[in-house]
Length: 336
Image 1 (cartoon, helix red, strand yellow):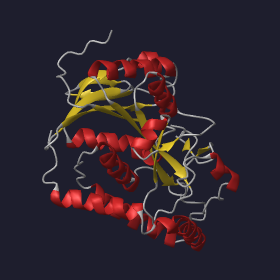
Image 2 (cartoon, one colour):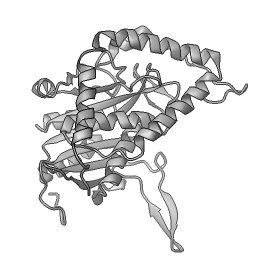
Image 3 (cartoon, helix red, strand yellow):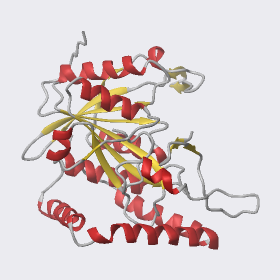
């Protein structure tokens, strides 16, 4: 039995989770949860026992000095609660950690135990994948669920994915079997510039989360960081004609695929978000990664022996057919 001391009764709580590792290209998902925790001044109320779930030769503890006293921080998963103010206040249970090395079923059951005790009404799991998407275009965000009714009600894709998975997929399925509504939001990160940070992908995830759970999220400097990131990648790509040509190819493919939506729901969603931010008042106060074809990938756009970056080969067309939703370059763990 999980006993929670010092945690008040929560208002319409939603659990938002992200895990570093295979499901977190560019650290976009874990950074999004860290941003929520920082902006709303969350306080940790629980942490999972690191001994139960982590291989310390894979995720090593760190030693640090506190006033001359040596201390150790163990890799684990921590939970905090933040209250979102406004006309309709609600609470978010933030789960931030590292993809566990072992005992995934027990790991998910422990998180679900917290969700049950706290009265969580919805679990939203954030992830980021590597895909064929140009850095110059809006970051594709796909929302998936295993619940057909929830998919229809929240305008999400019902997952049909089959293949290798990460902790995001396992946790979503655990929620489904436990009768807890669960959604996964995935950001597609350009595979030719996958090293963290990626504030543009983090910003896109937070915007989609904002729409999904109907809260206004203070973005701080994220918008400016995202613009600076894109300018920096523009400059790196411009240094090599092959990279520039590759990016242009991705742009053309993306624009062609999204042309039917150019004047439809996508524009309507952006306009609604603009109106909310204009009229909504002040915000409330207090390794490798999975790719679209299910493989691991290291960072691209790095200095080659000749000092220039080279574009990777585009994944085979059939890899796109294995992902879902089909239009968003979903990764191998995006079965959720």
